[in-house]
Image (tube, rainbow, N blue to C red; front, side, top):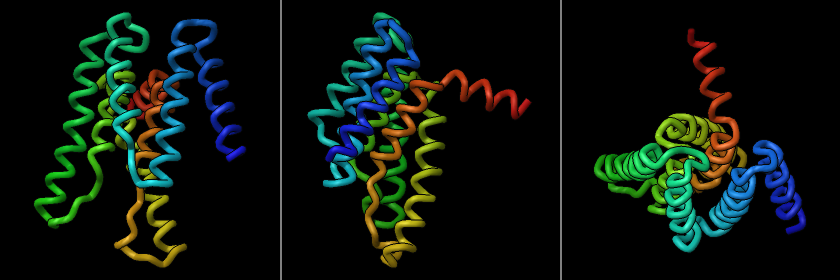
Length: 181
């Protein structure tokens, strides 16, 4: 428990430092608190509660009306695309295998992250969370010798990727474009 508090304090301090003395810093700290809570709840309970994901989503959309992180159009498209992208993967997987591959909380969390980062942040969040989640999942399965039946929460990887994207989206996009071009 003290490690969770230390982690939260460091993440919030870093978020505030990234945005300086601005209203963005205040909202980034609140965003960080909620993501840390979601991360540890999902690790412990395999659940992303609506009591946190939905207010995070609505707050992101409201903040977009003031262009705190992104504009309203980008936030709305980001929220809708975030939700629908994982919803589509869920149903394709369910139709193909008859099994549920993730929960609806993951859709809501990605919708919230899309509201904060805009649709432009979604590819970064999806690629980063999927890549790190796949590596961690493989390591966990090998270490615990559980095989494919082991359920691994996706929310923590979405939360970390979303946090990094909010703080570093422009730098990530610039670095990627410089590398490609």
